[in-house]
Length: 115
Image (tube, rainbow, N blue to C red; front, side, top):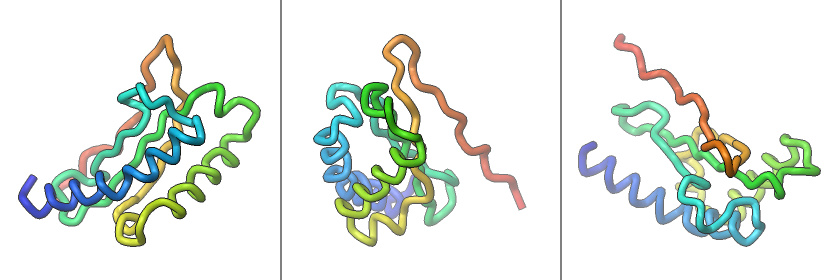
């Protein structure tokens, strides 16, 4: 990663802190769970590369909701808590259910193909 990408990543991290705290306040993620809120580059090495946010929600929060309603709730929360500049850098939000017995796993996008 070059300096510009690192600056962009730092800005994104700072921009998402308010959203992460709102998720904790809503009790959809646990504050002590380090893997509850992660993000990664969608196309590593591409400049600029949008990011994917992985939100590993608690079973308790997700129970009783249709997954699409849960995702809509998180998207509304995202729009209320981040700047438009941060929103421009987000490609996708992945909603996963946390499992205390098995770590959450999800497939990443394949590496970009050479032209």
